[in-house]
Amino acid sequence: MTMTSGRRAALAADLLLTAVAAVSWAFLAMAGVAALGLHLLGADVAGSLGPMTAAVVVLAVGGSITPSGSVEAFGLTGAGAHTTIDIAPLGVSLTGALLLGWVFARSLRGSGAAVPGRELVARAGAVAVLFLLLLGGLAWAGSSTVTIDGGGLGLESPAASGGKGPGLEIPGLGDIGDIGGGLPERIAGLADAKASVGFSVQAGASLLGGLVWVLAVLLITLLAARRAPLPRRWRAAHRTVRPAASALRAVLVLSVAAGLAAAVGAASGDGHPRRVLGAALLGAPNGVWLGVPLGLLVPLRGTASGSLLQVLPHPLDTLLRADAEQSVTVARLAELEPLVWLLSLACALLMLTAGVLTAARTPRGEGGPVAFAGRCGLWLAVAGAVALPLLVLATRVEVGASLSVLGVDAVGAGLELGGSVPVAAALGAAWGLGAGAAGALLACATGAAGRRASPYARGVRPDGRTYPELAYLPGPYRPSPGYRAAREETNPYLRPPGAAGPAGPAGGDPFSAPTQTSRGPVPPPRRPRGPSGYRYGSSPVPPPDEPPPAPGGRR
Image (tube, rainbow, N blue to C red; front, side, top):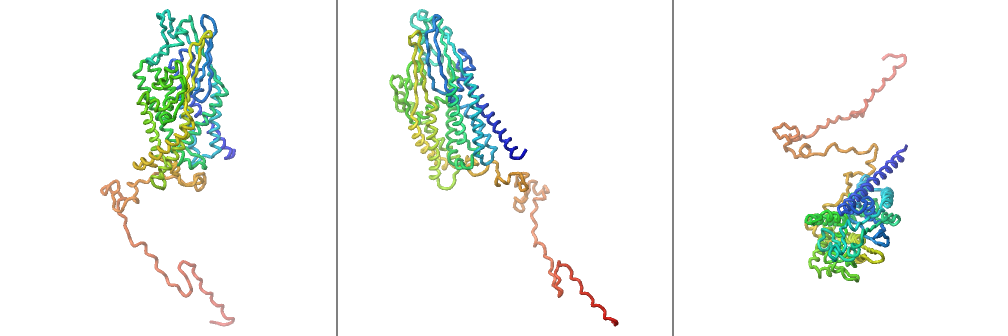
């Protein structure tokens, strides 16, 4: 096996293990949150918890579910229920997105200073393919039927209650939990009334929605994970897009944490805390992220009818009580409840916090505070122009239900609430520009500008390497790491002459003695050259040969 084939096999194994870890942890966490939320709400009393959990997870990742049902009375089957639901439990979605993105970003750190584009595409493709495989399994398992027994719900006939009709009350919600009206008054008098509601997952639409969801999560992760490498052509994103995207992601997650904390406080004073906690686990981001665009002056339009009016918070229920479609703005809600203006104040502080974080995570670079504020405001405006429309799309609600018994309409309920995407993009850019500039000036004044910039944004490798990448490959010129870092108290060359060492003068430290100076080595004396031209250090010149003796003569 060659070195190239061995490296390819190792990379393939790493891709597979990363995909398995990211997808499995994400689905396990989403299933756990969904099951716990449904259990706290008491949904497992009416049906099997497994299929309902699978259906909720499919809804959370962009899937589609088709409910249907019937009502049986007096042994006759003559009723039909038609329901449409277009709402995602964002509590489950957020849990899966955070875990999936965290594992994926961690897997990129082993790729060096820059991850190759092909490797990045391969990693994202492996995660997406495995995600769709598991989602297909959940789509197959997420079909079931929930049977609701009227007697089990405590419904009484009008005669048994004095002819008034009891109504249907949801414990823990006070007066707004009294739904009343159509359903209990028209069904409670039917002997042995039973309602069966079935739901099935649409496989094709769910797989398409899941593909969009997982690709969106991976893209947001790449834009917001400041300590993960990027391809070399995307290096500028470390200093521009990533600080703003990570700051906006941080404040949005923090807002959800604040919403969960408020739900815990509300549950402690409620008669049915389990239901409050279950609803918060599944839908806390829905309420919080619906309030963020509304607080940033994005107008919403909505209608509500039937029993769903009773579950809307005040003063939204009062505003939507009219039959026609209504415009929902902070100003109109403030006419009914003046404290609604605090929502705009909280959202403005949220954006200012994002501006300060953007400035702290952006390298200061050259130029004055005004130029730095302009850069931070520009990139936070880009992030806001993308994030606010995504919040509007994610929190859009569309619920409609109709139930008929023997041709008689028993209950009708509907709720539609959503905002304008173009208006959200424009207002997101405006708020981002102002909050980014103000936060950058505040960070410059306090000295926090650029202090939290990532090593990639500062142009430094996170592992501390300073040589070119080729120097760290196996070879004869590979530099060896230092044995340990130099310390001033033990290195005599880092101390001035005469300074005492760690043991002090009395300790006999040989390194504390001052350095002795001298005139230096004396050069050897120069020897004069002789007539033979002999030079010091050269080979000796042999003596001349004697002349031969004269023939036949004597000396």
